[in-house]
Amino acid sequence: MIPMISWLLTDFAGAIPSAYYSLYVLELGGTPFIVGGTESVSSIILALVQFLGGYLADKRGRKQLILVMSFGVASSYILFAMAVNWYFILVGAVFRSICLMFLPAVDAMRADSIPPEKRGLGYSITILVSAISVLSPVVAGFFYMTKGLVPGMRTAYWIATASFFAAAIIRFKLKETLKADIGGCGLRDAFRSYKKAVAESFGVWKLVPRSALILFILYSTPSFFVHMCILYYVIYATNVLHVDEFHYAMMLAWQSIIFYGSVLPIGKLVDRIGRKNPLAASSILFAPGVWLFMYGDVPRLYVAFLLIAVGGSLMWTAYLSLRADVVPREHRGRVVEFTNFADNLLSSISLIVGGFLYESVSPRIPFFLLLASMILTAIFTLLFIREPRRREE
Image (cartoon, rainbow, N blue to C red):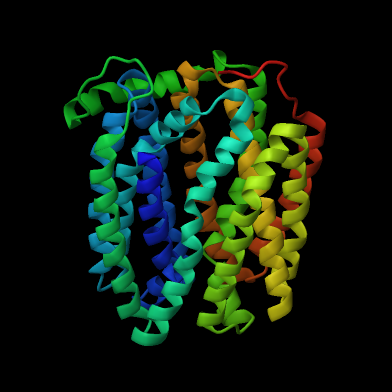
């Protein structure tokens, strides 16, 4: 219950400024390439700290790391709220990424807490907790209409700051899920542990089933192209498709409603029929959604966001469930850590590439590449993914 309350706060508040983040950077002097470049630097930092986060999650326990870094993330939003140019955004994003080293601990704690036979439903419920963020784009649109872009975004970031501090305080009541050598997470301890953390992170793939490595490799590819496009949906919709900003916020709200409305039945489906077919179906739905977005008028965009939402719900529920099925409890922190490291490292590259392609070649090229990657992912999932006979506890 404690984690759910804290995620309610952070998911709702954090999603408010996300709606117009790219436009905010442009208004503060950035370009489409700088939008991607800023997030690219942030992603590199986030990738590097995942080693340490996963190591400490498995060696020192989950709770303390989550507590300490939650306050850091809350503090980072002050820089976003006070930004007078895009350099403030860069510094804030880097600081936030450092503090997000607790992500492997969060994922590991969640996997620890869900029974194997209920993982699909369990992950669906944890995702469903974030359903309150359906209202976030509406709030963002209201701030935009009443205050303008920059003042509205500052208000959104101050709300995020207060909410993240409140969530950090609530997390004092978390219960540890791993018996470990609970120790400090100070800077000296962190730096001393980093080299060992990196070595153990790469070595963990020798300790887990081969199917875990195949799953990781297969789903790193579409992730690369998802990150290539993620910051440019709003810019493409408003500048190329000429959708007004408030209407775009309503489309995001529609996407969230579909995502969270579908996640519970999808969780039950994943528990009943297995993980593989829902994973393949996720890419099959995502691909036409991207096509409709590229050539969308308003009705097509609503259909596009519906398909993308259902595809995303299928993908994350089935992927997280299958990863927990094949990775033993004692290695989960490091597997999540390495996965997050690789995902963010690839993201840092894809954001730069996406910004270059969008600004210098064609705004449609990143979306075409995402479409192609989803088709290939569906085919490879059907050919290479295998489900375990026995699911890990």
